[in-house]
Image (cartoon, rainbow, N blue to C red):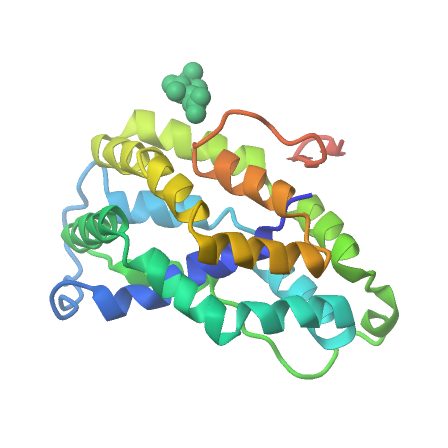
Length: 238
Ligand SMILES: *[C@@H]1O[C@H](CO)[C@@H](O)[C@H](O)[C@H]1NC(C)=O
């Protein structure tokens, strides 16, 4: 299993943390341009991100957050002061800052902004949407299994690679994402990250699965995950 939520939360906090380190004040939204350029990085990235089943993830997280004690403990851990500091430490890695600056510039140049990631933010309501949610949760392992079921990991990876082949800027984007691997390794080796991983492990999180998930999604490994269900639009789950 792969603990996508942390990945997702990382993405979201990247998205929100970005404004904090964004270079210049946000550029004004580009006026609607009559001539759409043949290739537009912002639109390409947006169309990749639209493949994240955001609503389904939101429902899943909401059901678990409201009804599952194991999951609640993990969310508390993610929101602890120590983890907050760890997130800042990650965002402060020079290579990551450079990457985010480049990304922000490219998005502005193509008429968008880092707000393209806002769509991934989860809005959780405090009451169960469906009464059966109270009974349908099944601990961290249950969450991980359901997450794997709805998150099209391999399709999104494939889409990132195809988009990179079809557009020069997207190609650079993907290359830069893949090149962040050493930063990730260095970060994981810090005592703070190791301590975080072991706190998660103690709470029942499949940390190795999460690590494989992140590595495969971001091009740092080509090893597909054994338990990831892929949705095939013609044939359903297999
Ligand atoms: C994954 O496969 C691609 C294409 O064969 C290759 O360029 C890349 O280096 C591989 N990545 C890793 C982390 O092995």
